[in-house]
Length: 148
Length: 140
Image: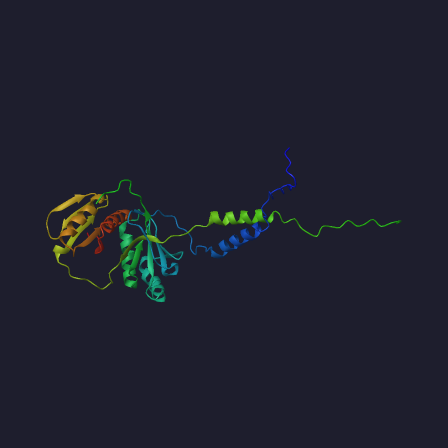
């Protein structure tokens, strides 16, 4: 062993990172998620969305959106209530007024609903004055892109 | 008793080493179960209930959607009706709109046609940047 005179013994490097703040960080992240998680106000319904390439994200606040579900048999659900077709405008009109005309209707019609039901809902929405309508679609990825 | 045994000191601390584990487990639970509900779709603006605007036939491209999903294309008042599949509509619109910038797409859907056919046609029109689209029910 080569011994240089006066060479101090190297202190052993600490092999442990202090992990006492790990629990603090974990709880902070946890509290963040607990505070920011919002739960769905309505039940999810059984339906399949139609596919569309031109699907776009809506730039609208969550509270200015009203979900109108049209199921395969044509029954209409708004806020978990089954609404007969002719009462749709009575249900939507006050909500539209309350939102100060900012309301966007997310029309979630099952892909196989006969169009006559969707058209009836559209006519009711026109009557209620809620003309900003978005047909809910899932994004369909085109396999081949057309070159324009 | 001759002498008192020294009471062993009970440790006043609960071992908290497992706290970080529990915190991470709960965190991972929330990370995994959080689902973001996106608002998306094809946007349209419906006309007012009362408004009916007179449009001349030359500014109209009629698209009639059959229950099978095929589309009948008729340009304005011309008697010629073309049967096309949905995927051709984007190209047809671009060609027609190049000649007439006031062109309106009059989409008429058969009452028994599934909703997805109307969406497919609307999709093609929006991909072709059509901004004047009218959605109607085919009256029999």
